[in-house]
Image (cartoon, rainbow, N blue to C red; front, side):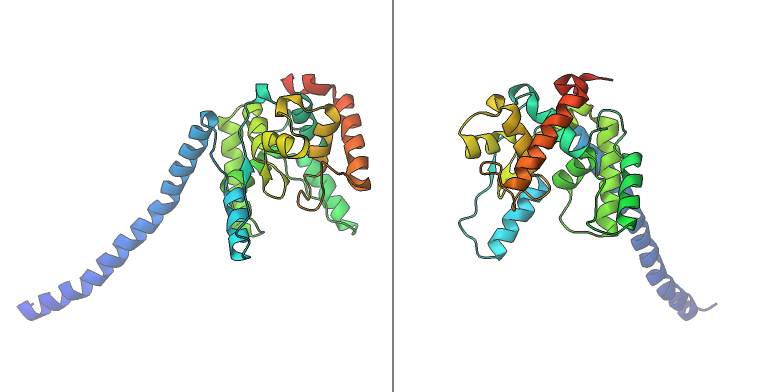
Amino acid sequence: MGAQGQDLKAGQGAPRRRWQWRWRRLLWLPLLFAAFSVLQVIVLRWVDPPISTVMLWRYGEALVQGDGGYRLHYQWRDMERIAPSLPISLVAAEDQRFPRHNGFDLQAIEKARDHNARGGRLRGASTISQQVAKNLFLWQGRSWVRKGLEVWYTVLIELLWPKERILEMYANIAEFGDGIYGAQAAAQRFWNKDASALSAAESARLAAVLPSPRRYDAARPGPYVQRRAAWIQRQARQLGGAAYLQEP
């Protein structure tokens, strides 16, 4: 083969090598993301987050809507500085099998599926672990991509964090009112007190607004919040109170 043919062949091979190199880079992306997400979860087992993606999302939403006066209220409190009535109220309201499942409550999923199949108001089955994964790391909205990432982060959280850390995280990043995140900010904004001083009734009201914290008001509860808070208190007592969360 002459020099001209060899040059032509080399010229044709160069684009192929470039594409192969690009594909190899793409194949590395999932591995890099997996390593990064594992590192995220490991770090946050001990480091308290300064903010969550849900907070950032809500702040951006306010800016887009032209609400320049919008403010985030968020103060971290370790579990021992939160009234014991709040964690058990959250579990009674949101995820009663929390101490026993591994991130996904299959019984609740089955019940929700049967309920939704019969029609009426849709019922979800997200666990506290799933809500922590979504609120801490992901964005708002519904999509298969976001749901897949939620599952991935939930698995990591359950593998790498103790249950107490998961619940501590939830109590601190859950939204209890528009722009009000966590037990400490809610206690101060609603009742001018520290999270450690929350009463059982106040804790139940905070848990009661979680389905729609921008719609319902824990400080001035309407009939729905009052009924739901009373139900949460009954459920918390039936579960055994704060001692329920210390069971293996």
